[in-house]
Image (cartoon, rainbow, N blue to C red; front, side, top):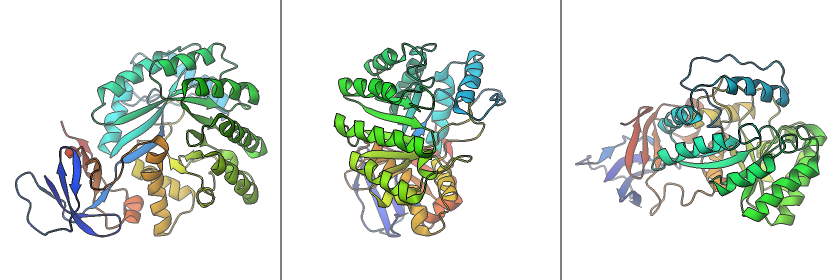
Length: 393
């Protein structure tokens, strides 16, 4: 099979030859008319599959009647309590709403994701089991990496550490954490629990850190020290990392050096109401920076649709990106960089790699980020799985 007349990110024009779900060759565009099963892309831009490095499949209310936001404050703790009320009123299982979200994001070109799933003393492993159903259901369409996430904290929710350990045994891929000081009030106690499980189970960590200022920086330094001591370089990420955007740039630069040395990645979703880390500074200091959508139509936020091209635009907008190279960097955060952090390999539009790609009507990568065109085609293993933003039955 041949996808003819495609434009690659560097502007060159190629045919994409596919067999047995893989790209067999990328010859220069021949100009030959499409024949048989061939598809003529007419010069449209080919992107590698989009990657959502931070999503909450178990939280979404997508497909349900509108639920007004019930938080009465802006603190993380206020939102946790508001979510408890919404969760208690649910009558539809998380596997159903999670499936709604997976279908929506795949139609927009996301074929790999990392989902944080709530684990606490009230929920137990229920949400994990529901999202494991979603992962199995869509196994041939999208890869779903699961983080066991202690949304209510670890120390303030007795029994959660044991549940996190059990979650890894039952299919979660990584451990999550949440504001060791801001939520649990005990930096060492929180990190002791996480790194003990991670070391014993041989898994990575992706920790939410909303705490800002020097207090947040101090927690990052402690995480970097623990990561080096545990030999977990390349297996730890800090999501949000708002503190990096709330301290002077020289302090952020020194912290970036520590993070890079420890092999810690930073996830940003281009937050609307919080400080954004200095993304280009982090990248220049050797930190892997990747993107995610975070909350989508849930008790935390009424916004979000899982479109990672739109998310790249939002990241660029918050970071004041204006030049083409900066917009390409924003796209890299939701493609190559995110794939690297998630360990997706092989990845990219290369001979021998999987025939997974996204087709958009744009002349350049920068235009694709700025305009966020409807996905003309989404291709998985050489098969068209979505067309014009709609899944193919």
